[in-house]
Image (cartoon, rainbow, N blue to C red; front, side, top):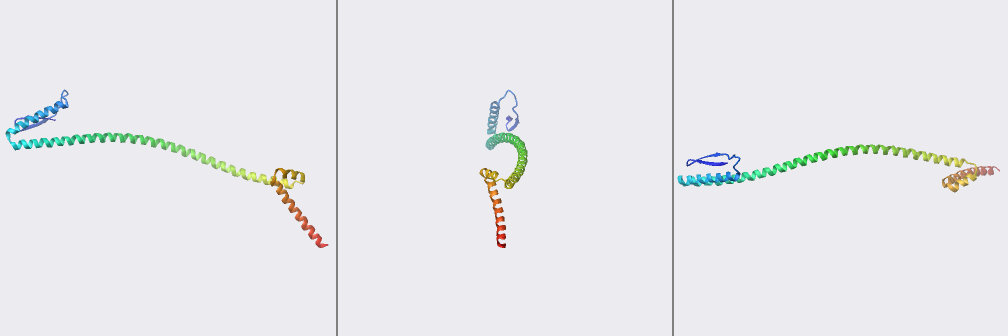
Length: 185
């Protein structure tokens, strides 16, 4: 703002909005006008001059504070814009993470279902294997040829053990029968 003196004590303000005038020119004009007002007030009253000088000093301090506040506001506006941009980026990242999370969750459900199916099949196959092994042992035990059993013993110790156990049971039964027949004699 430029100050213009009118008469001895009358001051009014006008804006320096001329396109041709720069800020420096406006400041020089204002300084010139203040100088002229100060000269006019010196002649009128010394107290008025001191009060005007104090008022100008006060306005200068207020102007400095205003500039500091404007600079602070500009910094805060920049920080706010940066924060808003960061917020948009984070929201975008969050959406990407949510999409990836949903995909991973779906993939996990498919894998979990596949795992349960494989586990069920493993249990079935294990039971089937045990049944087949028991059937195989029974068929080997029921075989009458010792040659076949001896060959089986050479390649399969489990079948051999089963055969020996069965033969042991048969021999005990024969021993009991003989013992009871011997006692009758």
